Image 1: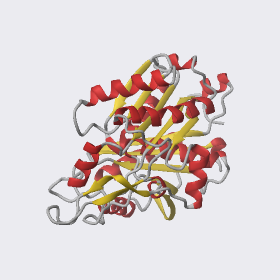
Image 2 (image 1 turned 90 degrees about the horizontal axis):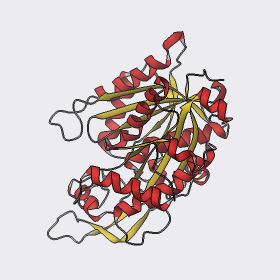
Image 3 (image 1 turned 135 degrees about the vertical axis):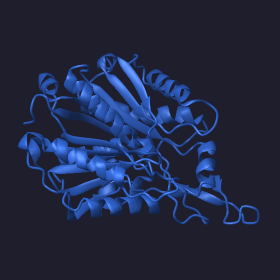
Image 4 (image 1 turned 180 degrees about the horizontal axis):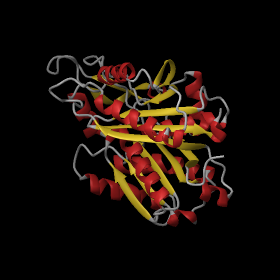
Length: 363
């Protein structure tokens, strides 16, 4: 049993192109993907002036897009995942007003400020779900690592007694012409002119965090325990004049090991890693450098899961999605190790690592 002061995951909810948590997990493990060309979004050809545009290839989540504003689409994606997370944690809409809520989003590429976007999406989410305002709400814009930053903030506040229950998640959609255009101009999307680009996806994912003591009082069964975490900044992120040497990612993973090992706990080399890798060369290189430099912390035969292979890149929903997939694996008793190391690298400097352990510390 986890210690009373331990931070546990008591609920998880997901919506991807392959469905909600159970369907997404099963499809991921079976190697399925629902990624297709779209007739309504096109990318520039190799020669922007003379070559015809090519269709965008991406993974769209249900329900089908009705052409609504991208901010409304984010709320539409988030609501089923949030409802599933609350239900799996044994929480009702009445409990929502006592929850501290944090949501990771991609900063808008067109008109509107991040603050405007955050308020709009949270208001729309509450209105569409007939939910009251949560106890507090915040929005993070640190990219892929946003969910991890929010989870660490929640863990610290829970341990200090400042919060009772935190719901942390992220949502992302590619159904935004301004975002697609900006990414395409930056050679970030896979196309005829950018084989190194990634395939965008749509997703929302949430996890419920609370202390083990409070979970026991509610009769909630933990899905996993947050055993360690680390946050660091990469001094040479994407776009830097100097090559990235994985200093930030190495720093974050070392912090995870240090925190997990406090009190004399034995921390074996990680044999199961869930990563936000999306096929981009700079991300693969960063991970390869980190794995080489951290040979004492990472088992050379580790099992690496990259859900973006099945769901497309899910941006700020990446870490909550990784956490939900790890928790579901623990729940099904099919985890390849007792601990799951989650890692994420943003386009900006933020780097993150989280260690989740299965219930009772075993598979």
